[in-house]
Length: 140
Image (cartoon, rainbow, N blue to C red; front, side, top):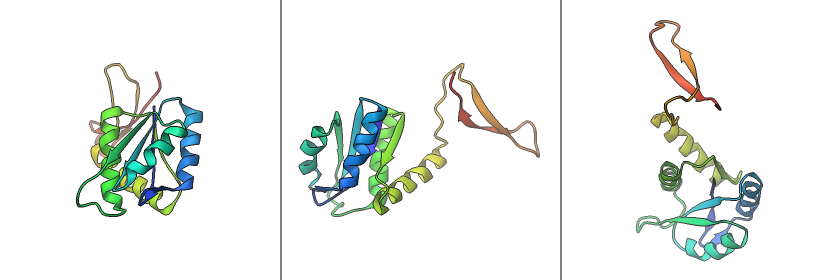
């Protein structure tokens, strides 16, 4: 499953967001979208028309307009529940800002999901060989 952050301005989809959805469909048939803020429900039919299976709509009374941190938190919340293969956003100022917030939060949470038997890449401390950290989960 591919998750796409979809930006809109008062219910009007960003045209680049539709291109990102199209690129995501080339990666996987199961494409889901996250859209945040008021008036986003106007975009649901248009997203369904381009192949989005599920639209996750985040809203709150205090969100009146574009808020990058709130948007990033909404995307992270969906990411934690669904564990998508990839998260995409349009290369606009807004999309890049939301992805930057997501990346910062992922780094804080040490976002590498592991199961018993997974092969991993580790980085050892040059000062203490008893300490290290997992930096990547390898394909089995």
